[in-house]
Length: 84
Image (cartoon, rainbow, N blue to C red):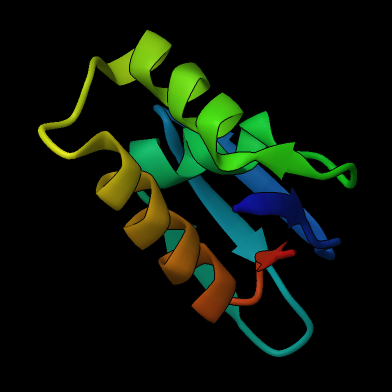
């Protein structure tokens, strides 16, 4: 899996949480989702690289690949990232 961030209108991060402003709505992200989004840019990133970045901040999940897949799926549903 590879993933990249999509453009947003604005964003604000405080105390680890991020509010992202899209065309018609605002999305509040948890600290984990905020860290994932801030680790991504417009260039494709591998799921493995994203997992390593998140593990450095939060430690390893019991099922790290499944956790990253679920997180990316949620961010994709919110219109914040795309998978390729």
